[in-house]
Image (tube, rainbow, N blue to C red; front, side):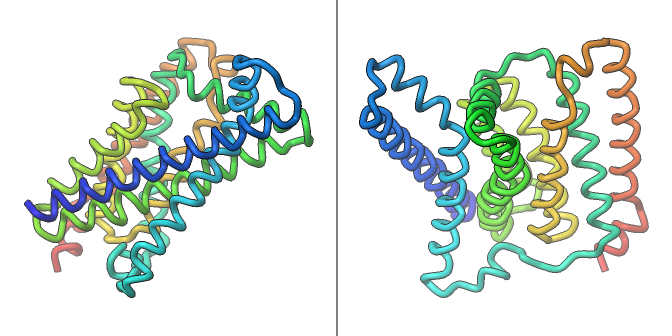
Length: 271
């Protein structure tokens, strides 16, 4: 029970720190706006929203740094604490295939759902690109394919999962870390995003259980975020195309799961 409470405690610390940083950055951006002549509360809020992508990146970087120092200063063995173990290339391919196909199914099924945070991030990226060509795209890639997977996997699978698994059964660590992973996305996209993130969290937890490698979870998370750059309402407006792709990726997902958790693999894992 102590491991469960400790894992949840680390998660709450992670969330409080992240929210505090974002609030502080919002205040700083608002002050910059006022200092540059932006007048009116609505205009200042609009300026802050235009910079939400930059704030998200800075917040993620500071969160990773904070988590690192939290374990490094007491001189803990970070490699052992976070399961920073090596991995086999074939296992990485399996993990990436599973995470990408599962994320594709979820993305396609929720393609028409309007998520406010996604709109704000997209608008912010366009704002940056209007100032410097392709800057918004570069920042989106940095956020979705580097910082978010690193920060979220470090917190949920590297810390929360490992704290719980030390004292309880792996299934408890998988479920709790997945539920917390889902809940942390509530403000970003409501119940739909929570459900999708929870399902993805279960997949990442299974990968951590199977391969005992945070690196695999981080790279699999990167693959899971790739559909954000591939699928859009404009490109996949045809329901027939969406249904066809959902069917294809569902088959790929089942094949990947069978490949990962086949009898031979399970026997090898238990030796």
